[in-house]
Image (cartoon, rainbow, N blue to C red; front, top):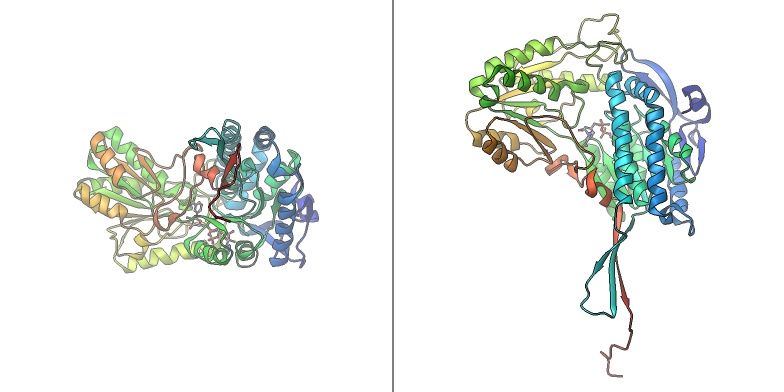
Length: 508
Ligand code: NAD
């Protein structure tokens, strides 16, 4: 992995096997959200850089017999496994880079890198174990009919800032496994680990032009990639507004579009889950984790606590007591449990949501402000205290919209039907959880939740083998699992007549 000085000198745009700066010469400083100081400089590409990168990816895809789409599957799987090995080798360095760039704790950064390596291993194993095609019985020994899968072509990938490398890996690993070439555009504020991953792909032996990256803004580079006629697929992870723009930009060229968007995820707690001290402690602890890990900047954050009325007071009192004790600080400091928000803009957005909730009648149980500065928490950092807002209801803006910060709203229910209705009352449908000791209820509620992932007595775990994605406005398509590979493939039916003869439909 190149160090940042080396990277600054040679540029962070990689197209056709060459590292360089932006065509227009622009650069951007990358800030450490813990103190707002610049700690790296990247190239700020624009539409011209996007065009050059797509051109390189196109050439690599359309190349001759030896080109990447036509390499044997075993070779592609071996490359993915080598990348996983390099990620393990560079885990500390990459984890630290992710922590500084996105403001997460160092431990979270390390876990992210482990999950990225898992994604590369998973898709390597998946393609390596596949049958080459599905033979179809055409009803005649003279017909050989087989359905095969082929790469889509040039894939554009646009990723967010909360899990920069993890979100990129859920696209890059299956795209490469399937034999595509790609151009990735990471979030303009957290591009560093994605640049580092491209270096590892090159080191692992990926041919020039297969993996390309353009660092730069969404409205220029991202928009150009989405509309580009030579891009065959665009896979986007980010907010609903930008996702809709990507879908619109992609429509005229009828490319494949995959969208992983936001969520407003319910965490439904039944009283029976809190009947014992142990059950109560687990449910509170997990509600805390659901809402506040990575300062709530998680698409599947359990930002809506929907708790049975009879246990609300005890539950929320304990939750607020524990939320107040969360240790905020620079993610790289030991003992810190939550880092800053990613940017001043993100903190301002969170502050506006809390203000609107209070104006609409929510009751502040803790947080709701910036913390006092300390040696671990410079005054210039974008810190915000974990916030619990009680007495919320579904008409409130803070309950309806994705805050993407450390803000937990509390609503209550009395019946199972009411709990389900509240949990499904969202335009999103990414993830949700139900806490209960009643196995029948757990199954019933899980079956009725309109969300892409449902946890029973847990929150947040995902498996690379299981599909991830949303119902409703949480997106289109799936990542991970076999469907996450299928996104990057076309399906082709090859029908061979072994005894061809005339049809004689036409008389003459
Ligand atoms: P964002 O929508 O602001 O930006 C995401 C990416 O899109 C960035 O790279 C950005 O530069 C680019 N972009 C912005 N406008 C664009 C345009 N017009 N055309 C093309 N690209 C454009 O989102 P964000 O603030 O970076 O990330 C937070 C959002 O991501 C949240 O809504 C979160 O829920 C969502 N997210 C979803 C998942 C999931 O798996 N469903 C995972 C992580 C994050």
